[in-house]
Image (cartoon, rainbow, N blue to C red; front, side, top):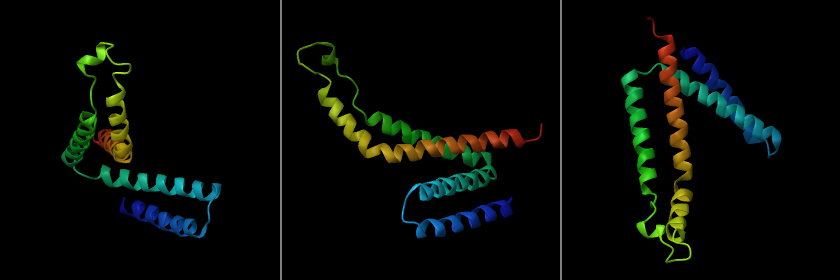
Length: 130
C-alpha cells in the first residue's frame, strides 16, 4: 500500500515540475486536474488505512464546522411576512451574500473533505471481512 502512495507522490512531483514550466493554457489545466486526482487518490489510500474511529471523529468535526457556517446565515425575520417594506429580505440578503462570499472556499474544502472521509469509510466497509 505504501508503495502505491509513493508511486502516486512521484507522479505528483513529476507533474508539478512539468506544470511549473508551462506558461498556461489547456495543457497546464489538464495536468493540474490530473495532479489533483492523484492527490485525491493518495488521500483516499491513506484515509482508508486509518482507524475507523479516527475517520468518524474527523467527519463529525467537519460536519460541525459546516453546521456553524450554516448557522451564520441570517434567517428570515417575522416582519418579512408583511409588506411594510418594499423588499424586506434585502437587509439579510446582502449580509448572507457577504457571508457566503467570505466562506465559500472554506465551505468547498470542508464539503470536499466530508466526501473523501465518507468514501474512505465506505472503502473500509467494503474491505472488512464478514
